[in-house]
Length: 115
Image (cartoon, rainbow, N blue to C red; front, side, top):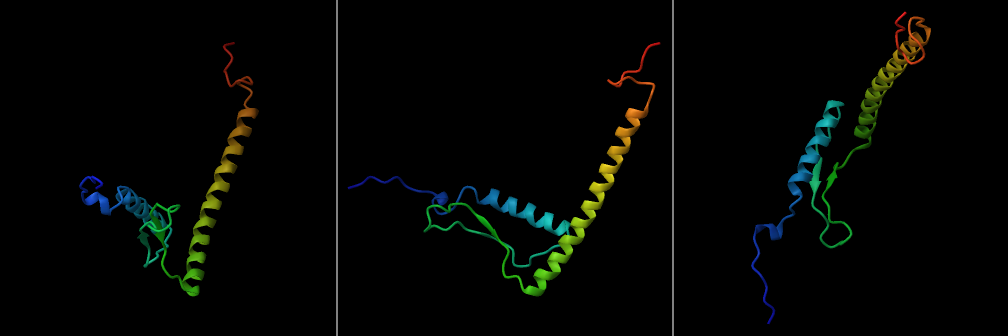
């Protein structure tokens, strides 16, 4: 006869479920900051029959074609805003770099001469 140890509640659950749920919460909140909501989003349990897949995953639920189109428009609007911001920041950086080269009071290393 095989001597088996007793089990506790963790025998039927995954220790990483709380971590998975917290990551899913961060994901949902990030999407909502973009104005995107998936009403059927959920955390999916790992597949117990497939030994290769032992991690939780996020399921987005069923997305209609109309919803997919609406969500794509919203995400692209936000991406356009981010792109414009990045372009302004690059322009500012180029101007600042140009000013550094045009400043005759400093040498090439950026030091101000003592004389």
